[in-house]
Image (cartoon, rainbow, N blue to C red; front, side, top):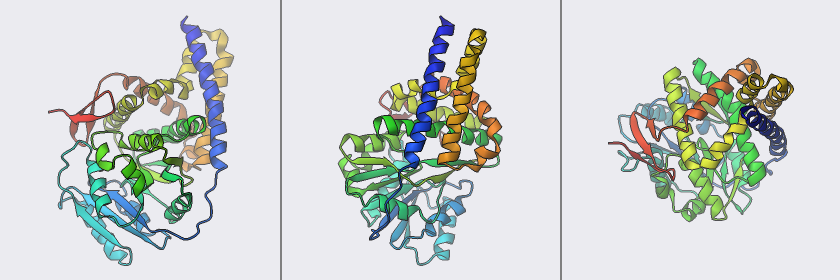
Length: 374
């Protein structure tokens, strides 16, 4: 019975690999329209401490090739070291309108949402780009997003990302997994069910869309506020798309245990936010299943080999054809290792309902909200 169950799972994974290749081709076929009259954009950047490469990340937004935009930064404390980086860049780019907001400590669990809500209130423009401090962009980012929002029916766009690690083996392994596996799930979901979610690192939205979903304040008790934001926008009939613009997500350099804690938080949060989708992730990682099938029923080794080939093709479709990722092209031999670590962390995500985030422990509720553990 175990062998037959594994055979069914591996067969499902093969189908998923095929869908990933098709979904990647469909995504690549979409091109944003040419930009007509540019509309002003407010860029919201929540900050907390010194991320790896923070200055270059923020500099990439000051250097946008776009005529009308402002940048707002938010920190919790005037002692935050990120303020010195912001002040240096504001002095280097005096023609870029920018302001900094000190929010104080948040009364709600999600400090990022609290900062975004303060910046939203202080921003001037209708089109908003919310980008994390670990995002790095090319000068074309705002132009591409503005061109996409020429569609009056579009309320929100979420940017896919190419993960770029720091000088850490475990972060490198995570980046390989993100670029070869995670994006595949995003593209398949887009193809089969439309975009009913958002990805946290970079989201563009109309001010009216945020108002229609209850404002950012309505998201303050959710850990995966990005997913909830996109889900609510789609449920209210606001157009949501996966943008044509791909950002660079600088995930930093984490040692082993810090990386595992980060992954566990992400998996437990995903399980609480979309339990059926999390269960379905069993099909997104065929290599461990193929190996288990080979061990349980050696006679079915051709199916296991097909699964391995399918995984390689699907990984190439996302990492190279969509992301043009130099990391995976150089370290392709790490893909199996990344898959096995990812599979173990996926299983671990089924157990436990607490997460560690920025030095505090939180309890995850069944609806995706979270609260501080006293």
